[in-house]
Image (cartoon, rainbow, N blue to C red):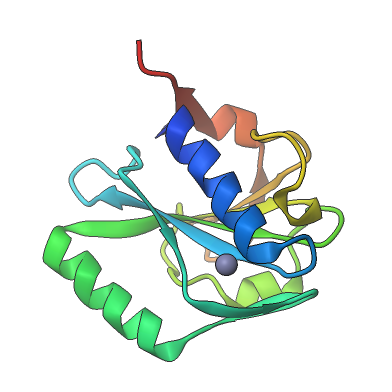
Length: 149
Ligand SMILES: [Zn+2]
């Protein structure tokens, strides 16, 4: 699978993660794609959440409104992106916040509150397998960053 995201969307994601996290709080951003073209990211959404050094909590109201918006626009959450204070890995907490439980859903963890270079270096990518368990993927192999000509 190749999930296409533009360079601008990737840059925007890092900007949101850094601005919200301020170097000491976790943050989450969602990448949306159309149901008819699920491997093309069309929108980057900063979720409404409470954040602290070792986790974040989505606001119920945000989730309720998100589902309505998604249904109205024919899009779904393709990838969840969130930061960790230090190293990027898939934690127990991450299992509890998948938002989507379908096979193929991707969760990207960005280390060091996203203060590093924009890109997939040192990130950790997990995917929900057909059996419902999380498996590891290489972000460089899954994502294709597109730069407009
Ligand atoms: Zn945030």
